[in-house]
Image 1: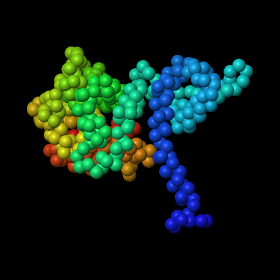
Image 2: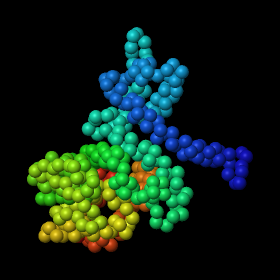
Image 3: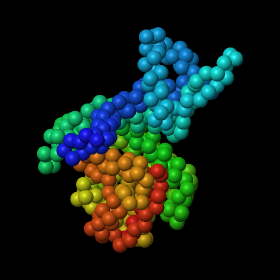
Image 4: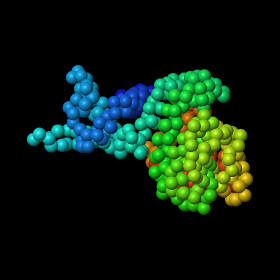
Length: 356
């Protein structure tokens, strides 16, 4: 078998396949954006049964010259698990049709667990185009990727751009619904608590779920003033604006869901110290509840690790990072906490309870 530089042709062909798979990976995101923009999951859902290609292109009003291209897109998306190709019997003949899968059900607008806002936010060119600047970013000592592409830190950008800020908050709220699905099975985590502060809680999606499950638990959603200023609470839900780097409202527990991965170790230690002060000021033995990624390459399945490492690269945009358990442990110790325990939560997120 022929070889070049000590590698045989078979290895080189495999290398080419891997290279091309990543080279054209952006097409995956654009196909996802395509089905959301055309509301194809909605169409199939409203059809109440698997839909044939001819029915789909008719509803979408696709010109005849593009029908074959739509078929190519649907075939590729089906191969990747977004649709299921099934056989149906209709008008005395067997036909191929497309049905929803668990992934595309998450892209039906109006569903309680719809992740459409997440897709729309993340695939907005405002965000995705920033990654064209990775080369410049790695040579800058302190600037975030958004500093380079947008001219400011991401949180400052949100403050100055209300429309995108609204899109971002809707995306985070949709993601929270997925975490909340898991939190419903974690009642022991909240039992015995009288007050809890959801730091960076956005519009209160998670806090509302907690309030419903524990009517006697008082929840405070703590976020940037511009996020919470027009929101109204209820008997056991309140909104407070402020800066988590300055101080956090006093409570029995502090919840940090998908917060710490946005920040450097130095910033995380500052946030955790403020959390420790918030639960210590209450005169009880409180705790901090963290929902975030814990990288565990030795124990996780390959695809789960792949997602976690991809999320780690994604956090480059704000100079944040995903962390291994050892890295989390180091942060807790430097922030003055004495103990912690970690539990699986969703497919890639963990729940960590830390104690002073």
